[in-house]
Amino acid sequence: MKVFKFGGASVQSADGIKNVASIISQHSNQPLLIVVSAMGKITNQLEILTEAFMESNVVAREHSYAAIKDYHYNILNELFEKNHNVFLKIEQIFHHLKLYIEQQPGTNYNFEYDRIVSTGEILSSQILSHYLNKVGLNNQWMDSRNLIITNASYRDAQPDWNQTSQAVKNKILPYLSNSLGDNKHPIVVTQGFIGGTTQGFTTTLGREGSDFSAAIFAFSLDAEEVTIWKDVPGLLNADPKIFKETVLLPKISYQEAIELSYYGATVIHPKTLKPLLSKNIPLRVKSFIHPEKEGSLIHKLPVTAKYPASYIFKFNQVLLSIMPKDFSFIAEDNLSLIFSSFARIGVKINLMQNSAISFSVCFDKDKTKTPALMKDLEKNFNLRHNENLELITIRHYENAVIGNIIKDRKVLLEQKNRTTLQLVVS
Ligand code: ASP
Image 1 (cartoon, protein in one colour):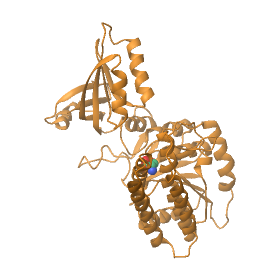
Image 2: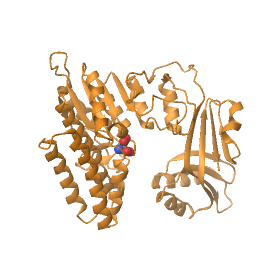
Image 3: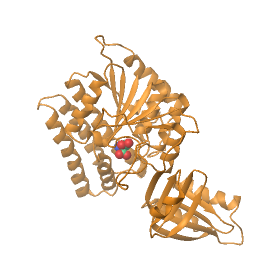
């Protein structure tokens, strides 16, 4: 059994859905679990809808709802004839969404966000499932809100691995283990990104979390392999939007891929690899535009494997220097105060460095979290901060190329170990 994950870019249009169906049909000689993201940039649009709902901004809310509905109906009209039963299903989903957003918003933003934003994956998975059935790829749609069981950390939910494994095994395995004869095998279609609490409330795993969903399913089902279908040829040594000359990493170890995604390589969600590593399940990253190409394979490789230099750029960074207001140094008591602020407000640290009297931290700027964090820290510390910075990470760096990367920019902070160089530049 294999797990295929299709991201938003692969299903952003009617042609995209047709292409996904063609890829699936070429692999339908084995049981498949298909995990799909919301279409195109719908998650961003649903975030805008959530904002409008929370602010009770009726005009913005109606406008946003109509745009989301139009987008899906344009795709539906291209894929299905007018009287197809998919229209009834999609109408029901929009009807529920409309009823929900016409209510008074609750006070828990993250709870409301998950309830609304999860609709993107419900819609895309229903459309894909109906289309696959239409072209003879018979499949079962399953609701991941009953499969991936999480805690109630809305927008950043953590799976309960035992409950999830059990639910996934009980509900999916009986279906996938039935051979359909004639070398045909069952297909299950489900959603990435979303889960549910034991009380039945919808949760999400964090933006770009569908890769993680694919890994959770693969882990729970002891899958043979996971493939993430992307709009890039595989794992590259830099983002092709930033670097003209990139090279493909055809085979890399789990550990190397974990480091790259942790430092911010956006091809794979950082939480994806550890569950796969624990069960030795290989991960392929392939292009949905050129499915015939090999792509990249992440699997078990010796730690001595050699890699070319990889470059990771993170923009919109804040560099915050935190200094005790009293005569104390940066030691365990102050560090524990600082870290508890970051944890409570949910700000993830990208880089940190300390001296006797100052602790410097680099993190992504966030409209609400950054001011909340500063306000909290200001109670005990003096702060100095810079914004609009870039964090450059070079894995397997060679001293000769560093100057070319920095160019005429100012380096505000530098950190080096044997394999990785990180620079915060203005
Ligand atoms: N649709 C969600 C997002 O855009 C999850 C995902 O695509 O992985 O963040």
